[in-house]
Image 1 (tube, rainbow, N blue to C red):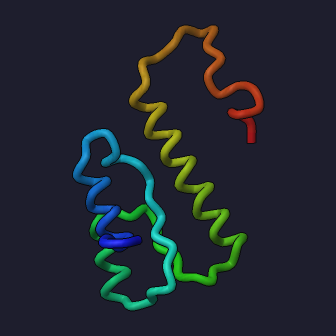
Image 2 (image 1 turned 180 degrees about the horizontal axis):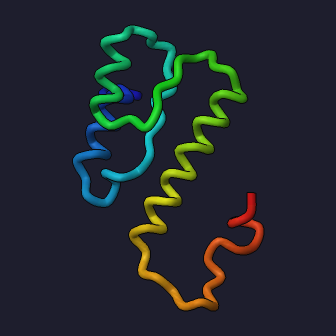
Length: 93
């Protein structure tokens, strides 16, 4: 990324109220422990070093998505008993 690394992008996202809660996974070839710590302290949801095991990566992303859905569901106004939220193809797993 010209002029900004992944941690810079993450810091910019965390500084904005409309993007500060988005899950962010840093996926990089940098395995320096100080860089990893810096990324996690900046608010990364996960840190993966390339190349990574695809199954492990998929499991981590699934876990992040589930936490995000639980978080957003907890912030949504409660609907009546007839709510269809979470039903259908998009809501089934």
